[in-house]
Amino acid sequence: SEGLAVATLEAMQRGCFGPPGAVNAAGLQRLNLDTLATAFQVHEGNPLVGLERRTLLLQRLGTVLLNNQSIFGDQRPGNLVDYLAKQAPVMPIDSLWRVVVECFGQVW
Image (cartoon, rainbow, N blue to C red; front, side, top):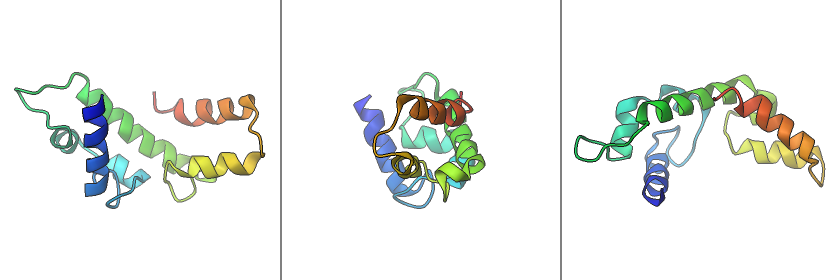
């Protein structure tokens, strides 16, 4: 898991998920299996179970960002934090749950 986390950070810094150092809807939607395999150093001697599914989930996340601009603004996943902070000083769990289910439920 730690290796995938480091590989993901490095892939983001190289621009695999949007502009270098960032993630956005367009970058996630154009992500393909070969790019993710390269980022995760997947090859015959170093397989990664579920790589195809991971790629699909990231592409779907891009679609969710694009389709929910009232929450994600300029289509960056980090804008969710700004959206939630504006809702109330203390976030009621039902509000948080609604956003998570309505937006990210579409990914799965």
